[in-house]
Image (tube, rainbow, N blue to C red; front, side, top):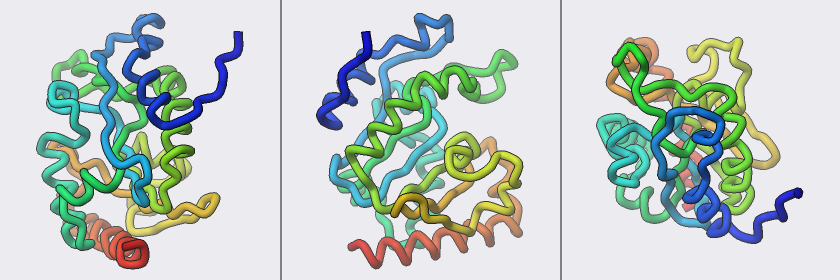
Length: 203
């Protein structure tokens, strides 16, 4: 039986909270879904997947990656508390995927997991209808930019898709080496300048 369309963001969120599709398919994930924010936000951050501290706190970008991300966004005049209370934050996959089998960092959700979660993300975007989307990290960036492109060809640029501006940022995890390179930090500064332009226009 085909599932009826969702009527609201709250209905989508309720479905995400109850979702066990990945577990039913044998993927080792750790619910519940993690997301937060204003259903009428103008800006939306899309991360890769919640980490363990995000899962425990029920709060996106709760740990060091969030600290670094909002340090970048300070350059765009965006204060963390303001963003968390007035804008929207979610991720490509909604639940904590667990650690890598090697134990070094969190597991990257598989394509199958991303496909299972994709309808939820599409509906979040539909109902929030943000004017600016900030995909953070490769998994989120690949929703909008070809995977064949290097981050150096993407970060610091923007593109408009169906009336929405997409401004990518690298993964802000401390485990990432990319944002630690001086040349790449210049690209992050360029991205932050683009975000500031949009923020100043919208607010």
